Length: 217
Image 1 (cartoon, rainbow, N blue to C red):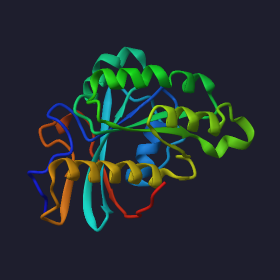
Image 2: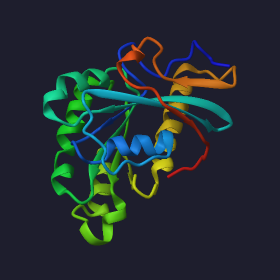
Image 3: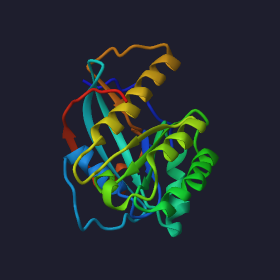
Image 4: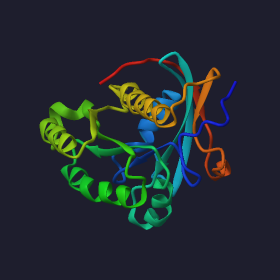
């Protein structure tokens, strides 16, 4: 059953957005989480695409809608519109490309310019499978940045699945608890929806996978 009157997002956007420079691995992070797939020839995202996944958080089934936004400048006007009302964001950079980390400030500012001030943000250093041979961004540096800006932090690898489950489940659990507290509510049915039923879902392909694994950072 679905608790239809419980919304985790505003009227113009989705529950969680993936943001960051093109090529950092946002699409593969999402496909690894929702379908347990990795595509070595993943194409550049055009505009915005989304996937969903149902998982168990604190004993409740939660259906999350996650939007993958393009990192290219020419799509910025489109993608920034999806920040409005979003309750969570994964800001992704590539640990092997310091330039993608240097742009984090700009992405964070753009997010806060369009999103609610209370949005939960996780800084994600992707491609940790290459940390021994090609790392350009020290994890300590990124962790200090996250701490100083009130962000969650984790390093992941979409290629070998390291921390992908943990990253998504951590931010989704925090969102789930935060929205419940703000509404003074508890789930009345078996399934809670972390999505926006008003969003036009014909804009992007829809996929869903079902697994559960509850961990905390």
